Amino acid sequence: MSLSSTDTGLTAHESSQRRPSISIVVPVVERSHDVEAVYQAYSSILERLQLTFEFIFVIDGGERSVMHTLESIQSEQSPLKIVPLPYYFGESMALAVGFEQAMGETIVTLPAYFQTVPEGLENVLKLVDEGYDLVVTRRWPRIDTWLNRLQTRTFHSLANRLTGLALNDLGSGLRAMKKQVAQEVSIYGDLHRFLPLLAHQKGFRLIEVDIPQHPAQSQSRLYRPGVYLRRILDLLTVVFLFKFTKKPLRFFGLIGSGLFATGFCVSALLALERLLGVTALSDRPLLILGVLLMVLGVQVGSIGLLGEIIIFTHARKLKEYTIRRFLR
Image 1 (tube, helix red, strand yellow):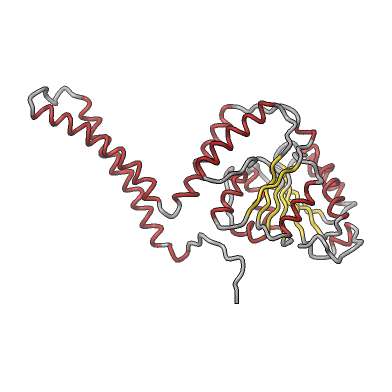
Image 2 (image 1 turned 30 degrees about the vertical axis):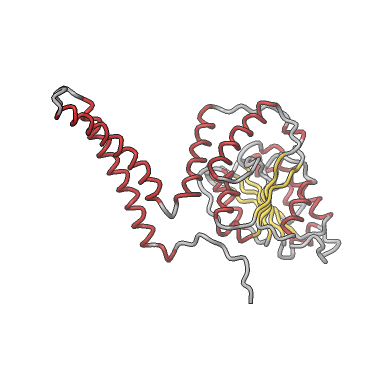
């Protein structure tokens, strides 16, 4: 992919007759009323840059109204694929399906609504052209409410502290990546927003760039408590994948050791009191707690040991790294 493409003067229809250099994957999961405007805005930029491209709209649940809107566009503009999913699988699955359908060597993800100004796409593509494997965007300067900014800052402070990376806007949907990133990074559940962290774990080179926030994003957003809880749990999942996927005994062993040590200290203290004749053990429920903690500690540690055995058995099939090129 190069911004100085020699395919000058290509119309959208002519672009569709050639293998696209850029695939735009748009998961239509929520707020789908802007899909036509999103397509028109970004396709006009790509045409101005004289790049061959395709749009892949993956419709989660196959909503009829969105299908009708996109089909009317498709009849007029050719570089457009519509992939309806028969059920509501979530954004991660929609992105994974779009990645499978993508033909371009550069893949761009977009939300189905305006998060950032469309003109930022050019800067994102330039950075991919400069050699970065993944370019993520930060909505900055932000024009939304202080509540939105507070939520974002709190979440990312926690995420950066747990992972050791310094990213500021994992919720921004505009990203550009080389096709190899989409092929080697697995996303599932609700891990789509953590794609940059998973790509970094694989050794891909990433960069974050500031793109002005779109005026349509100025409204306040407050979610149900369950949404915040799920995001915290997803973050903990990523932290585990980030640090302990190939060494589970360190994670479970640490927890198991703490439980066993606590139970052992409680039991030892009670045994010492019994030996000194301070009190009997028959009426001490604390003894049951001490023994229970030791048993739990052994069980949790055993889970980590079993994980290590599984990892060792499949070690030859596991690949933690990515080789971008060989030097001869």
